Amino acid sequence: MDQQLYNRAVYKYNCEVQRRKVCVISCLLFSLEDVLSNVNRRWRIRPLLCERLVHSHYATMLSEHQLSNSDLFFNFTRISSSTFEELLMLIGPSLERKVTRIDVLNVGEILAMTLRYLATWESMTRIMYDFRVGKSTVSKIILECCNILWDVLKDDVLFTPNEDGWVKIADEFQSKWQMPHYVGALDGKHVVHQAFLKSGSVNYNYKGSHSTILMAMCYANYNFTCVNIGMPGRCSDRVVFKACEMGKKIIDNDLLFPKPTAISTNSGDFPFYIVADEAFPLLPSLMRPYPGRGTSKLPLKLAIFNYRFSRARRCIENCFGILVARWRIFSKVIIASEATANGIIKATVVLHNFIKMKETAIGLHNYVTTAINGEGQSRNQRMSDTYSGLHPVGQMSSNHYNIIAKNTRIKLTGYFAGEGSVPFQYLIC
Image (tube, one colour):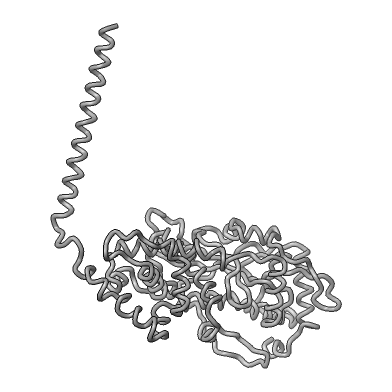
């Protein structure tokens, strides 16, 4: 018995000796690594960065233009100075840092840096030179600020309307686009970015680029209603639509649409619906054009239906056009990590809605186009995907549909050719 106790004590002693040796060696290795990493350092902080409080863009340009030149401030940040201050008050408590040194970054600098990065296609290195902040710090605070913008604003600017809200949206669409019971335009885009670290071909799409899918629905005033962000570009488009929460609600008719009502004297009850292109399925609550555009001459009724639908669906295209025109980071391949890329998409979506809610529509004609007005006069097309980093998605489902959806589209076709016709549709079809 004594021998066993002795052997156990010796074993424990040897184990402790080995553990201490490992600890000592680890400490020496870490110390050596620190010494070697500092051998070639010319300075602890670059002299360029030490001049931030005096020579950065925030200290020189923004502070001056915010008060004296609102146009230049808007051009620099893509928002007005009053909206900037309001946004600062909303996200300030979440961004504020504990003051441990005199040159700590303030909330205004962080927000201005993030907005400048989103508003241009400049790299984080250029942001480093402009704001006199280290590149790694720029990367961290842009990710942090984008996530905070999403967390703070999403509940206020992105929400699913109730029945009364859908009726109000339908009335706006009827007034602007002459479409009855139309409650939203739906589309999806591939947001192109660099290949993420260790992601393989997960985000590699059919167009030969790496992307993340942004699926969104908007209403008549070009605000996003529902969005789904983060599905990898490699996913089958049918999988994207069926897997995302918004797609499930549309398929299950779970968006709390109002009960069907009549759209004309002889129409009977007609459901409220969303408009999409040929990539999406035909459902009772999701209408799409007739196939065959560009391949054969359609009968007049079908051609009128397709024209009226394409005209109304331009809302979502204009919405994406405004997004790209305001936040020019989408005009190029996004070079960022997966977390930062998703944060950028989320931040720009909520900023898009926030700015539309707070600022007037002055200058909106520079971003969007109405292809034809009530007099049948065309306007120039100002929005194009050719310069954009947003690419259209492909087929979202098969061409099979049920009889209810088919009959709904037939009724709507008859309405556009009869009681719901507009004079200018015959100038196009």
